[in-house]
Amino acid sequence: MPTDLLGRNYETFAAPEPLKQHGPARVIAMCNQKGGVGKTTSSINIAGALSQYGRRVLIVDFDPQGAATVGLGVNANGVDNTIYTAMFDSTLDVHQVVMHTRFPGLDVIPANIDLSAAEIQLVSEVGREQALASTIRPLRKEYDVIIIDCQPSLGLLTVNALTAADGVIIPVAAEFFALRGVALLMQSIEKVRSRINPDLQVYGVLVTMYTRTLHSEEVLQRIYEAFEGKVFHSVITRSIKLPDATVAGEPITMFSPDHKTAKEYREVSRELVSRGIVA
Image (cartoon, rainbow, N blue to C red):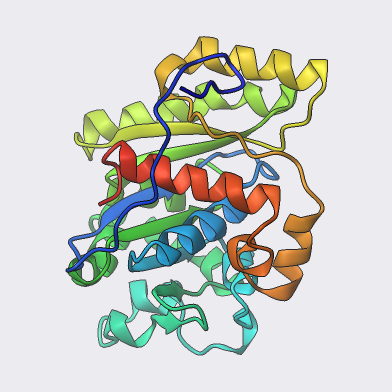
């Protein structure tokens, strides 16, 4: 039986069988208000790995920077319809906003800088916390997984993502400063759970940017003490190959399938399926 970096035993996560039918989707918010912890990278690469395992996956880019859009090879500034227009144009069918990538089974709803206006516009909306949930509801029956790539903040857009989600994955870089804001995020999750979305779960904490240093090992231990069984067995190590894959507009599981980081993201995906988080 293998052991993880924390010394925990776990069963090997076998490659899942392809699904014979698709939907309804499990909606996962990839969320952490600290930037630079691997939210977008993890969204793209978990989605890429799951699509290779025969799942239909949709990424909702919910960050005005549009990094997930660009990371899948789509020109964020060259698209007419984005998640912003889908949310505020009632005449627009959300299916018209979904873009098929060149990777089978992997689609994206793009975002660009226009989304930065949504925070202000939502303030005066009726049911403002439910805007994203209402927008993506027609798509749930068509996908197995919908991953919402959140912006690094705890504002109204993030609250919308948490309201729309079934659960949250929290990427945390193996660095001391990345730990500081997680308590605030957990408070926000608890508020959304108690007031708006009582079924919201924390699916797990994904440790990213790990290096074999004493500092990273200490941070990993601190994360485990805070979250215990919620920490994924799979840990993502720091790699120069990830930026290369981003520049190429591909998940690393397709850009360099034999690379160590690609294998780590496939293991995360297998763990999600094994734990029943994803079908």
